[in-house]
Image 1 (cartoon, rainbow, N blue to C red):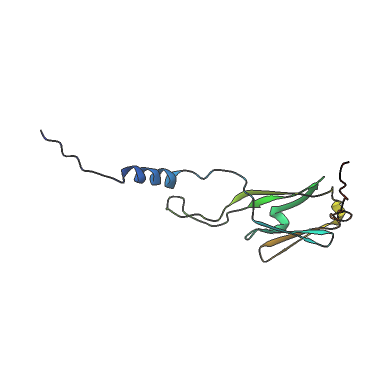
Image 2 (cartoon, rainbow, N blue to C red; image 1 turned 90 degrees about the horizontal axis):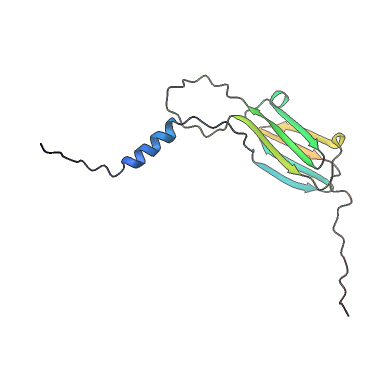
Length: 140
């Protein structure tokens, strides 16, 4: 009896792709993209959060010297779970923490949502934190 071997140079790669394709998505919180800048004494933070209901699915909190934005992007699409699809949009929990230079007053934090972007302004967080030049003297 003769055995014929057929070379399959990409068999390992096929196996890797099959494993990735059929693997369940991990349940993890991700961090949305953010853009931070200083506007005078205020910190302005913008977070990309398209496809969410800001009143129900987002929470903005000040915890001492941290600004925390967290929530969930819910998948409302009716889809078949058997079909093969490419998912690039992340659904599920998200969380982003921004370190502040000083503890912020929660009464001075405002948040607005427009066109998929959450803008959070922390007023007066940079007040009194302007750099001060220190004179350097030579040791004798």
